[in-house]
Length: 216
Image (cartoon, rainbow, N blue to C red; front, side, top):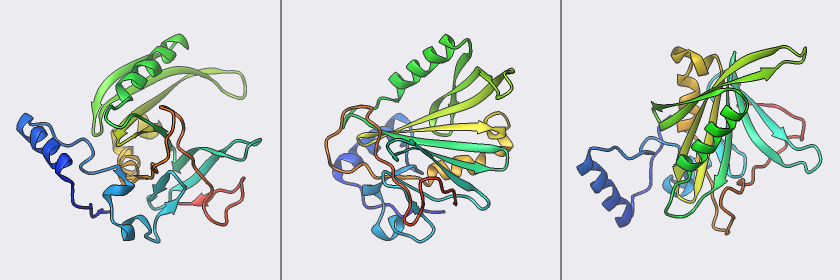
């Protein structure tokens, strides 16, 4: 899926020029995108699912599951499942000019350590990410180690956090569909003021019931 981006304003062009001089590519040149960076026909295309703050495009055979709070009915996270791999997406408000992923990344690593696990920083296709290995208890009470990749992408006034689970977290050949889905994601931040780290509001797709699952 190829997005057509809107023309960049002068400030962004200047930032890109400085990045080019330093030999550093623009972090989001290939996505994920802010809604102001794509044309309306891209944002409203029929193959996209509008979930409020996030507009997604799944891969063939991918299943969309929504984590909904039973009391409030609010969508808390998006889970995209393909065979034995999954991608969880959450979006948060961030300052206008300062990314928060480096700070959030340190906190996630500290929490993994507190749980008796490990967190290793590594460079991935979206920049610095974390590989977590933490103990998890299954329904039968057995403890096993779960590996996941936690990816953070800083955008204009938002942070998109993606967690890769299952086979795609440990086997590189299973990761491309998850990474492609993340790249094709569009974040709709809106103009309303929000507290830093407040979750961007997600919603059920039109016609869906709170307990429904849909094909992406």
